[in-house]
Image 1 (cartoon, helix red, strand yellow):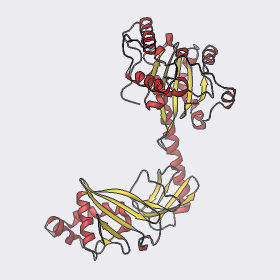
Image 2 (cartoon, rainbow, N blue to C red):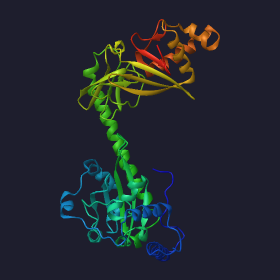
Image 3 (cartoon, rainbow, N blue to C red):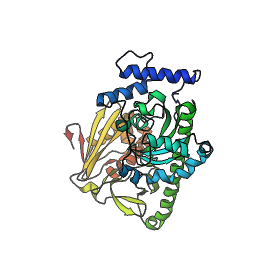
Image 4 (cartoon, rainbow, N blue to C red):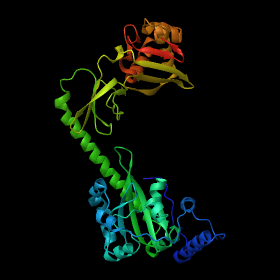
Length: 398
């Protein structure tokens, strides 16, 4: 949950007087007069976006028959309903709140409430399948939450369109913890006269609870993938990673403990700790293994470009390329190896770096860290770049 939620209703204000003030602000703004007060920044910015787009505040939006029939998509959102309802059942008893789940395109996937609230929502086209984006219906808790990526309470005449001024709606974004992408919005809508200052906190709590459920499902999925991968990996020697569809690591061997990796494409890719990698499909995810014989390919090249903080390393091959960063000390080691193609021992590197051969343990630790990133691009005894790997330092080529 975010650390700060901006209240749409000042705690010390008279509800009726505040509603009238919002109405005067809205009318003056759209009639070209000076408003008695400035709307909240998030509302003013939304109104400005919509006015530039040419949307009119008297626009009335109705759901089409096709939308009503489709009811929107969002299987993941629908699957969260039992947990979401558990927080809100007591609110439905008074028929004062509408629970709405909308997807990442602002289409209403689910709407639930008593008969009175459903009738009110029907009158403005706020039904399953309806598109409730800013561009369609103006400033609102679903569309504007998606536009800002932050929880938002839109109260009364803060809505851009006049036919929504009797509503008060709080929306909280819901992200997929696996991909990081926006899944949609949890929205609580009610009559403006029934709204309080805590509704946004409640919507955020519900969204947080739903995200926690998604993270727990993901944890169980990774555990299942880890268990299933044992039969496949138990006889594989050398480094490998088992990752799910989003690159989250379920199991690994001879690789630094990583939480997530970038999955290779069809041609492969460079994965820190594995080097040039190919992906093999397995049930529920991927098995990542080093591509054998890669570093003997003439297309493989490591470019070392010094930076203010050390160096930027770019590895490129016929399969593609990737960039990594190295610290200043690691950059010094790489530059020394580049200038000594036959290799250097740890004491020799220590003497060149520190003026004494006795810091060889420190050198070995730094090279170990480098090999977690570069894999077999650096080989030991003595330390040197692998045969066949071209190394460029700025415009110089080894």
